[in-house]
Image (tube, rainbow, N blue to C red; front, side):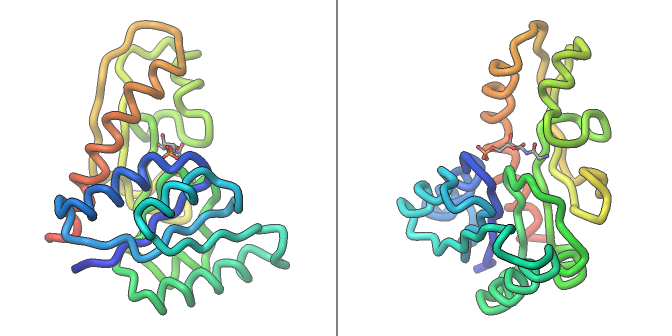
Length: 187
Ligand code: GAR
């Protein structure tokens, strides 16, 4: 059984979709740890429901990104993590983690990359008047939302309400993330 680490900064609905898929056997995997860069993230409460161990940290408590990433790498090593799934982790992955887990880190992003990278992808797309939205899952490299694409799913929306786009997109994210992890761990 493969061992996943999920990284989240806030809500954690994608974490929950992955944890639920593991719990019901849809994914032949286990979430070995949830990593949160906010000690009050709602994702932590979701983790309690599934009994997932949590590592919650405050980046300001460390002298540098390299310092907290070294601690994360030791933790992932100790848990025997096979795949790192970023799920609303709003922090750029640094060299320490990228080198230690090269080709083992994936991310989900709420746009059809390479369009609308960064933190406010949906708001930017709505402001642009986009009619075809989408979700992308990609490998993580040193670029911002720029690694090679693994999966994408599009949906149409002709309106100007970012909340509605988030709602439509999240339903797709939860399905697509589980399907994609399933493919990757069975390759
Ligand atoms: C998701 O919509 C994800 O695509 C987005 O954050 C949300 C987290 O939701 N990620 C990014 O924007 C990354 N650039 P969740 O906390 O409910 O899983």
